[in-house]
Length: 148
Image (cartoon, rainbow, N blue to C red; front, side):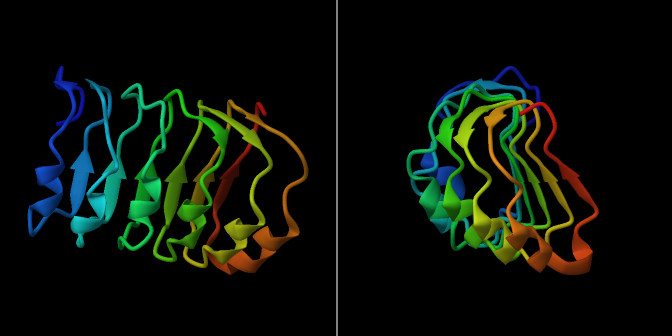
């Protein structure tokens, strides 16, 4: 449903679709909510970039999902990067770019053993790249941290 002119808040009942593996709501002016997303037990791809997302309230609910890709770039999310993201061992691709994240890149990034690409450019993150990033191993192909 990418770039489809959607507005409003998607109903949380969408998460109860038994075979939902990909949710692509990118480039829609929606009020996305994470509440209830834990029910999407097969969700592997969550693409909500450029939706105007400004809050990560209830984002902890994605922690038990088998996500491979998380795309929440080009939104209005501020504050520290939610550490819940770094507890999803199945993640291969993460895009958090062009938000207003602050603070440092959490050391927990080293827990993402399957990570291939991590995008966090165009924000307000400061500090050193954590040494724990070396724990990722040979799977990491792209690390984009510019413009911070």
